Length: 238
Image 1 (cartoon, rainbow, N blue to C red):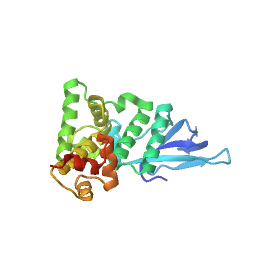
Image 2 (cartoon, rainbow, N blue to C red):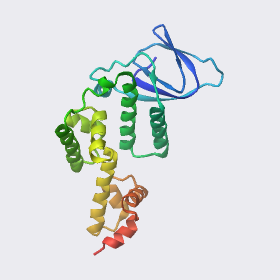
Image 3 (spheres, rainbow, N blue to C red):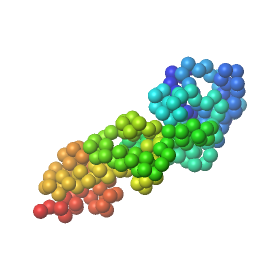
Image 4 (tube, one colour):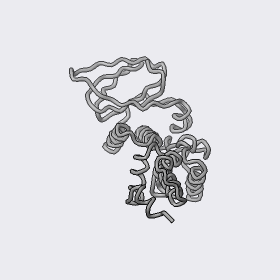
C-alpha cells in the first residue's frame, strides 16, 4: 500500500494491476498513478518480470501541477515516444549524478507531460495567458536567481505564485534555456568574476560559486567558454 503519490513509468515487462476491483494491463507504453493508502494487486502473465521508475510527489506539489487537486487519475496514462524518451533521459541524468536542480526540473516536466496525456487543459490551467505576463514571470525568475542561484524550482514557483511546470515551460520558451542552465550560467559568471579579481585558489572559487567541486567547475566553464579554469585564470590575470 503506497504512502505517497507517485507516477510509475514502465520501462520493461507486462503486468496486470488491480485497484478498487478494476484491472488494467500495463506494459512499456503506459504509466500508472499511485495514491496514498490505495490497495493494489499485481499479476504477471510472463515469467521475466518488469522494471519501472516511480516519481514520487508530495500533495502540495501535485496540486500545483494538477489544477489544485492532488487526486491522481485512476486509469493508466499513455506514454508516447517523447514521454518515454524523457523518462529514460531523466534516469540517465540521475545515473550520471547531474545537478539536483536539473534533475528536479526534468522530473517536474516529465510528470506534467505524462498527466497532460490524460487532461492537458487541467495541467495548463495555471499558465500565464498573455505575453506580458509570461515575460514578467521569466524576469521574476531571473531576478530571484540573481539574488540566490541556489533557489530550487519549487521555491521559485512558490515565490512567483505559479506551478513549477508552468514556470519551467515559460522560462524556456522565452529565454531558450532551462532554469537549471541559467542557474549554472550565473554560477559560471560568478566564478569568472572571482578569477578576474585575482583569486588563484580554484577549489575555493568552485565552492564559493556553488559548484560541487573543482571538476564540476572545470566541466561547466569548459562548456561555457571552451577553456579550463586554469587557462581562464591565466588569461584574466592582471
